[in-house]
Image 1 (tube, rainbow, N blue to C red):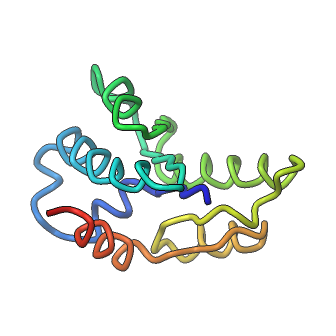
Image 2: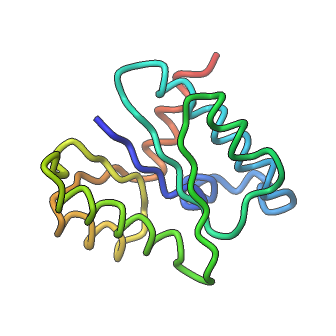
Length: 132
């Protein structure tokens, strides 16, 4: 299973002050996603904007692929749709892709391509249950 995470959507699922330091919120999420990458799932997190120094390397160390999508509002959503569409066009297909988002438009688009969708709140609760 390949899990594609709409990063800021998952971060924003809990109003815990993440907006005061977006880079720290991204690093925290990536650290939590590392627990999933230790299992049979591969994980890609997609964020709007640009990476802070060291973020991509830290994610790689945690076993996570991160992608940053500069380009304004919904840039990450467009990047996720493109990623799923590329998978649909390949021989692997998308039946083993789950996109994590609570964005209704994004969910509709990736479902139309054959991907599964998991809500950001439920996913975040599942991540929390994996962490001690």
